[in-house]
Image (cartoon, rainbow, N blue to C red; front, side):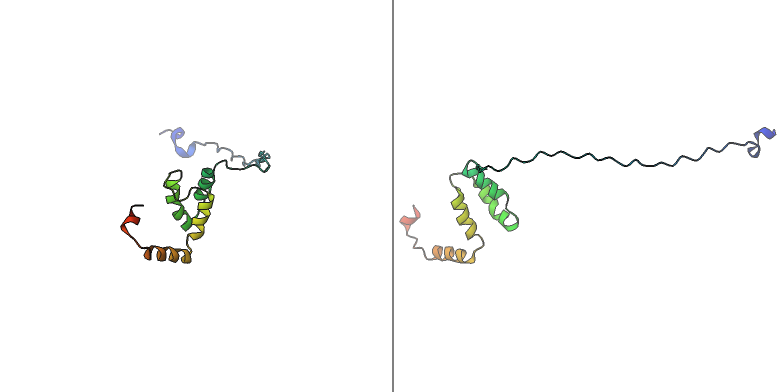
Length: 119
């Protein structure tokens, strides 16, 4: 075999090492955020239903479990909570053992005549 074909006789030049890569420091531009409109004393919600919707939707934990049935009935004629006064009364009664006991006593001691059941 010819010496030209021998592996040790063929000299390949080695490539130069790669140049070190330096990452460019990112340039951050200031983000422009519109300022909120200042509060000018106007009402945030125009109707009682919007107020109740906001209040009931922003409940957490056990209060949210209490609020969901009221949310389902909101706007219905059979809803217990029709306005903010009803909401306040129901919310203050929620979790109050005295109010719960008073309601249970009232139900237990009501004289249930047949004519009262028709009303």
